Length: 261
Ligand SMILES: C[S@@+](CC[C@H](N)C(=O)[O-])C[C@H]1O[C@@H](n2cnc3c(N)ncnc32)[C@H](O)[C@@H]1O
Image (cartoon, rainbow, N blue to C red; front, top):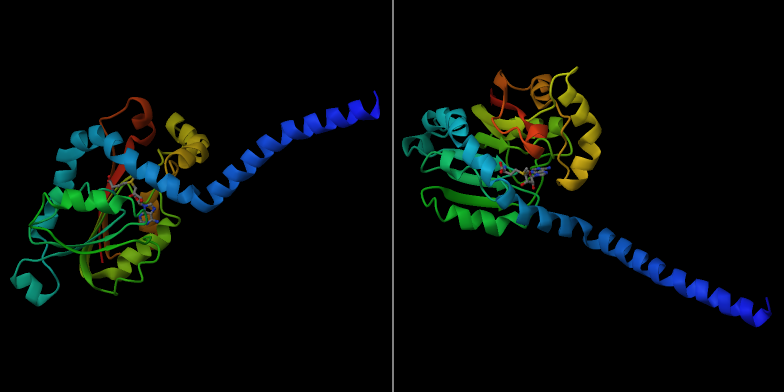
């Protein structure tokens, strides 16, 4: 091969390599800078539609889970006289739980995905008896905007699977609750050890977490709540949701609980 032919070959190889390399670098940069934003936007857009079946199927069960909130009294004397309850919901998403909150509630939200905020307010219009106090863009692990002993009730549904630390989040929930305040949680959990589902949930978690915004299939949230040993009383029970097909099968084991400070 002559030098001219060699140079022509090198420049051909170089031109073949540079385009994918530049595209790769561009995508990498894009992912580094905007990856989280794009993921948050995708998740917020997909969540509402994906969860229609879940919410309609679970509605009655959730209603009875939250039922005792209707008779829960605020620790604040003035608010109690007016039958107002201070509720904090963590990871509210587009607002799936308005219908379970007592009328006259004052609601605060802590939600890290800002793309949910407009959807949440759109939903809130349908519940004019619930007064929005604040929508805080932050995570449950560090709710510094909320004072100690300042809310009567904390709610989370399908959130602790995604937080960075369940223990930190539960301790924060405990910090912001007044004495006698209640934490209502409703979460999917790792099936008991020795079952096929337990095994599949364990091996599928890395991929699942990548696809579904950091959701972990392998968390024993009920054990962590108990293990934190911060609440004076914890009542919780595991149950299977009636949805079993497709992806629902992976999250069919749930826990519903009420923890009292
Ligand atoms: C699976 S969605 C559930 C949404 C809603 N609670 C429901 O029941 O439909 C999980 C929610 O938790 C939020 N989330 C994720 N990590 C969180 C964290 N560290 N602190 C609080 N919320 C978080 C997500 O942004 C999302 O809104």
